[in-house]
Image (cartoon, rainbow, N blue to C red; front, side, top):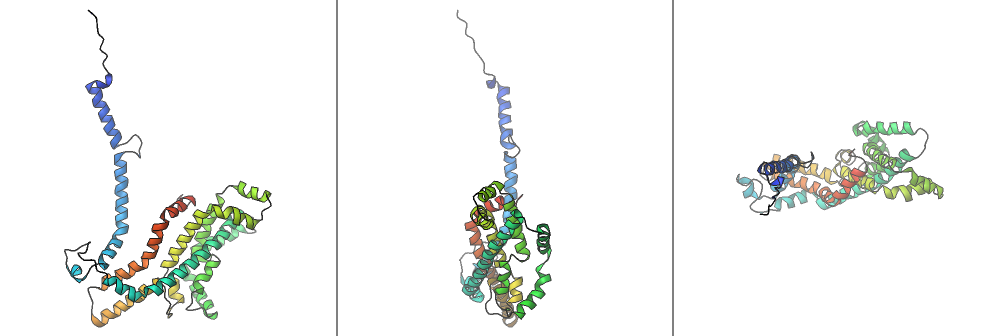
Length: 322
């Protein structure tokens, strides 16, 4: 009689299968590495959703309030989503802000300041990072000193100087310092450029020097094309910073008819308060303020939506997150 040998696979043993199943479940929950498990991902998603909710809740509340009609505003059952989308409050805010004129002025000033600071701070940052100039450490110390001096300290002599030059109620005192990278914002942008240019390989400059390129040619033809991430970061920071700036326009443009959006919101709030004092409070007062604020932040939000990917890449490549 022929004998048949039966080989038993150890993985088919009940205890062995149970151990493999437990190990697989453990790998799914905890992960083979610390950042691969389900628990870690759930924790990360919990943190991200919580932070997102904290930041976006005011925006959602703003949009929800300004799109409600009178019936939805009175009805306590309507919390976030209105039964009827009503654009009358948004139209009132548009008229109070004189939005087309205020938007054009804000766009003109923000673009001008952003372009001037992007160019002037690039030159200064390259000089601090690459060139051998006398008293460079002392000049950089003075730059850091201007970084910690608040604008409230220097506003009075600037106002007197602008008054002697008959520049009050004009945009020149706001835009002219950007041409020289002046002030707190200029110092920040120079440091960003300096950090970026300092991390570039020296071989690029040495090869250009061997070919007979001058300092200006090396900066313009070799280093500046490499600095696109830093240029984008500085431009967006400067644009949004100037767009939201209330302090300098309130100092130089008091009494002017050409107000940017940051000041138009203050004027709109004053108009609403005067109407409340004369006619009494209205249920549309708060939604009207929400609509004014939404119109003010809408252009930077649209800009960020289109430039988000390049902005994040630029922040990473300029070393701001290190």
